[in-house]
Length: 118
Image (cartoon, rainbow, N blue to C red; front, side, top):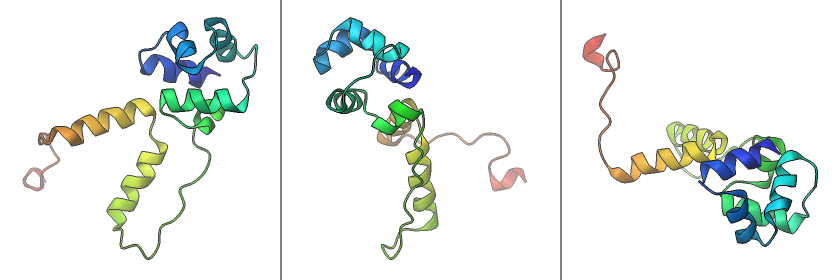
């Protein structure tokens, strides 16, 4: 389960730390990551909670489920696009995006992005 290793490292956790947080040994975490051992559902869900990612992400490496179309709730196309992008983003990218949004700082425009550059 390569995605588990990637998600664990993105959170800055060692195998020992992750094992302690979910109630399994460091050896079990190592075996899960290398595919030598399969975890039970409860452990899978706990790992997903700690690593802030879905079981689907851990098992498949991506979110295979397509976002459900939203209708009648007044969301603009732009907000729907944001929602779809968020659903497909990695946990690391989500954290970075949230840090930018929470900072409230404007992002400087890249050359060629402003209408006056056209």
